[in-house]
Length: 160
Image (cartoon, rainbow, N blue to C red):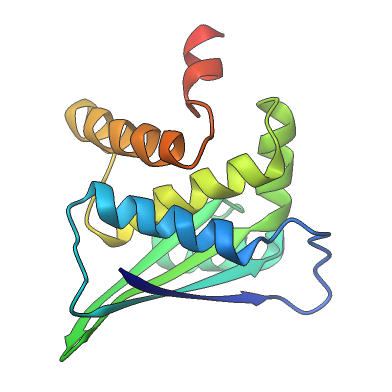
């Protein structure tokens, strides 16, 4: 499967060494695999932007009418050309991901992988508005993250 994940980091945003291109690409690939997307004969493109809290809040307000920074936003494109499927854009808010990882007692890398999987599933049409949808999406997230060697991202929330 050929997955092109282009990563852009906002100017001046200190992400330390937390952005592992190979891991993030693998996270997106696991999401595609789990959703049954077999792209042996086509490439799949996703753009991932890492932004600060102000930009996340601006985008979340503009597109979702929620005026606060959030961990990940998904903007589906769903463009198919011969040999190419453009899924869309993911926007990850680095400060929110770092804060949530600390609050949840997990590494930033594990939470970033989770947000990449979560966002990619949204690009594929998954949602978590209703309980049934949430169960399906969370199960897909668990499988993808387990394949990457990460713990169940909902385990601590369920236990707490």
